[in-house]
Image (cartoon, rainbow, N blue to C red; front, side, top):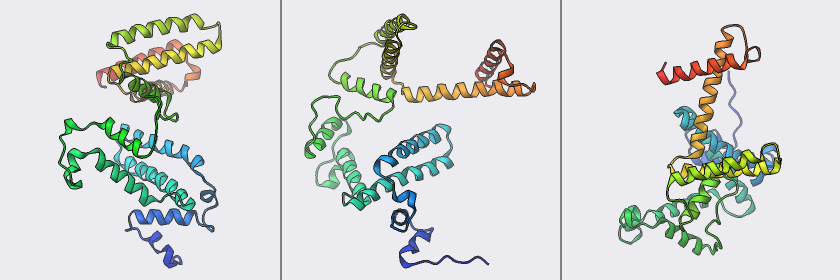
Length: 280
């Protein structure tokens, strides 16, 4: 016979599988209590931040794989990160989860006057009349946030490719941009030549020129309306599929890549590539 765990009134919701967000909030409160989990109690915004980024990436990965079961789980993990940060803030007297929800709800109402304008006592705006940047500027002004540069506010924690794309997008708003993708391709050729000139000469300069080339590639992605992170993930997945096919083919011969020559692996790579293109 299974014993029912002792439940205090404060723990009742923790065990209530039908409870919604309040259950998760209580679980986090319990974990952070003086007699809670030692690991959870010692965490800070800084120590949790890497997990927050990781969980967001896992959400994107589940979407890319088209696995809705994993997506449901990963969204829960990401929600936990929000609850975690909010709990730490509540303990410090800064804000609580309800404040987070209220703030983002208010923001959605403000930024969609073409949908909610009449509900706030004003006329419903036309979608084409909504100036998103102006709305954001008003929000910053209300918070007393002053930006000295159009590049202010681009998070340093973005991946290099994403930040490069965002920086060039900001600069393009004031006309600092190429007008034709062909011009960007010309710059790529220029940066490639500069990289070639430094290879084997100066490692620091080689790294700098390589960075310049990546930066222009991110700019080209923006001009082509391509998300560089998505494109690179697709390239990673393609490489992984094809290399795994090499391993599978060699395994059928009781061999591994370590036992094969580069020529043999190249031939198997070409076979995998041809099979993908033919839909086999």
